[in-house]
Image 1 (cartoon, rainbow, N blue to C red):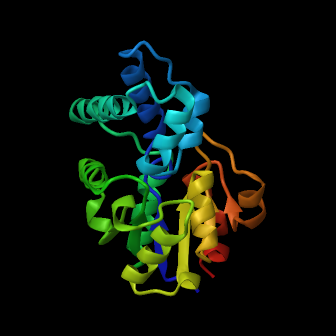
Image 2 (cartoon, rainbow, N blue to C red; image 1 turned 30 degrees about the vertical axis):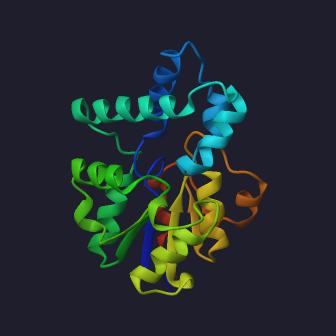
Length: 218
């Protein structure tokens, strides 16, 4: 029986992936470069440390990748100051639903803690997540299962008691590999064959989960 709910953040709870892409595009353009969606798609769901080598391979070692990353961060910080961060459809309602039913919830993310806390607080749902595990808390980020295993441990539950919600291939692979019942809500990147074969359920959005709730939690 499921007793704990674990959410990924970017692309699952919030529609941040298109924003990150725009921020990377702007930062690269300042150096006269084009940050393609093909490159961005490879970086979805993984940590910055994992994404950096992909960018170096794409642009070459003569390009200041660190400057592009810092520019992206600066652009996103500015966006957060001036704009709300949009929820994905049904995300806020799903969080409130599980909270009202008494489930203890956690966040397992490839993002950094500073941004996670800021985004959750800005959108008034930080109080629902006593446990947050980020890429800064693990040695091996997604698609390694470590972030999910650590989150389950902090939530005081066996992995078999955890229902995970993910959007990306890397994130879903991490949750599945951890042994969790994994629900996938694809965002910019569609599931690969491993995720399609091993995910418990795949939905177009979080507002579609309720007819199957007994099965999801049973």
